[in-house]
Length: 130
Image (cartoon, rainbow, N blue to C red):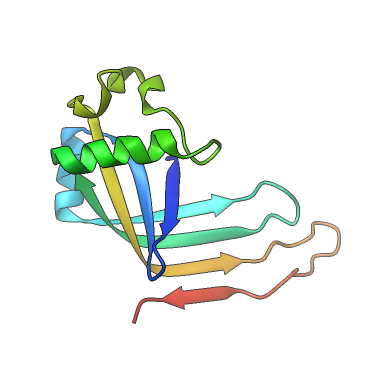
């Protein structure tokens, strides 16, 4: 489970994740730089969506500081103070802090289904990068 902060820059949707840096995560993303993010609103009719993304773990000083500032300066519930994570209490220079950049190439929104009626409440929306 990750806390993703999505931003629209006027042309593209970009996702940001404060990420614990581990050798396993680094090796996985070097071999397979893709992630799938699933979202469920938890309220009937239970709409869901999926974001298929290219993922890049950013560990350079500039990206780590910008990522820290991005999360800390965004109001809750989207933003948060990364220092609440024990491994990140050293701030953006902590060796355990990294920033995962998500660039979606496929998005899909699924309308929920009412449990009582069994009917769909909307249409499926799909976007795919050209």
